[in-house]
Image (cartoon, rainbow, N blue to C red):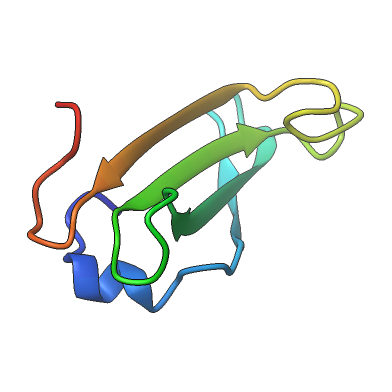
Length: 83
């Protein structure tokens, strides 16, 4: 997702993207990606959050806990905010 331009990320704003992935041990995991405005409203910075969780493990991030998560903020000019 970091390689996508600001304009490309806008297509995913306010939509959660889910895909299955396999862990090194062969466990099926879910990767969830969300893109949303970072407080500046339309045309402002976009926050991209990625969360990996085990659907067999009893819950999602915020309920039980995620296995891994990360986020970044991309400005309309393409720079990464705070990096």
